[in-house]
Amino acid sequence: MNKQHQVILSLGTNQGNRLENIERCIESLHNEVGTIIKVSKLYETPSLGFESDDFYNCAVILHTHKSADQVLAEVLALEIKLGRVRENVEGYQARMIDIDVITFDEEIIASEKLQVPHPEMQNRMFVLLPMRDLNLDWRHPILQKYLHELVTLSEDKSNCKWVKNLDIALSKIKLDNFNYIAIEGNIGAGKTTLTNKLGEDFNAKTVLERFADNPFLPKFYEDQNRYAFPLEMSFLADRYQQISDDLAQFDLFKDFIVADYHIFKSLIFAKVTLAEDEYRLYRNLFDIIYKEMPKPDLYIYLYQSTEKLLENIKQRGRSYEQEIPAEYLEKINSGYLDYIKSQKELNVLIIDVTNRDFLENQEDYIYILEEIRNKISV
Image (cartoon, rainbow, N blue to C red; front, top):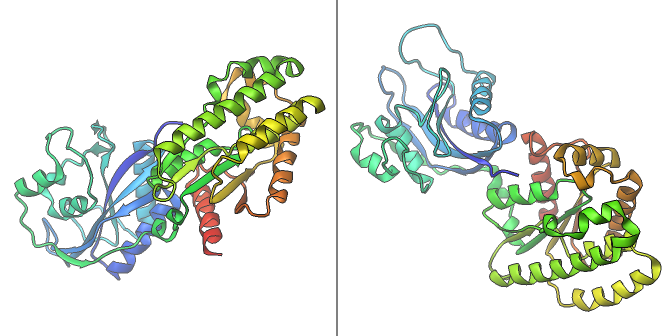
């Protein structure tokens, strides 16, 4: 999965209840367009280029997998939804809400509909000051200047007055109350996608399973009886080595870590794939290893229907997975649920993602964040 884009948006309003307009806009962007991970202070600034009431302005950082054109289309639609009326007159106008796309990563885009970086950003203190609050390591790709340099060099000397600090929804999800979160699910459930998104949005360290490096996996899907035991043993050894190596880099009492697997999955898959005598031997070895492994503070299981799993597996196109039978996936799911029921001391959150696409639909991702927040609040 590709990294999310980092988009900087500038928000402004000078009609109606300005504070309410800004707060509602931030909430709507977060719920509908992309994840708001940081917001600047709120400033009151004089109207620029026309006579009108003073504006409230701020800037936000938004994470998304959407293209720049998609983001533009969605913020324009959101402006209308929030009450903006664009009159067909020359020059600047007072507005209920204004959302400008200022940057899109460090790209230079010059199309008929969109120009980024915004061509006037360096001439607008009400854009530069809020952006500087975001503590970005960002350099203007055309002017080759950092934000603090743009502020110093700008000819706009408008008096931008601090009004208040603003909150974002993400700050209410105290994920850093946990040091170690494991996200699990069946093949194709989206655990790696969610791990990466949480890692980027909450600035967490991520531990991702090296499934693609296992030479026995394609062979296993061709001849399960022959390759089940070497496959499960190699997975166990690799998971043990990787978790030991990766977690050794971090401080489990200070760092925030999100992993897309928990080593207990080895036992779940082995119970499904191995013959009874092989499983007994495997279990003896597993128990020795398991005692040494750190346990996650929160264990998230993504449940998805077998039909949807098969659809996801087909879409991601790994050749060696295409012949996985539905029966195998159902056994794996049952194994996970049996394991979860047996773990009385494990802090478990089960999220049904059968009808949710948290990569493409922001509302579905917000649903998952709310489920996590509710679990933390209990």
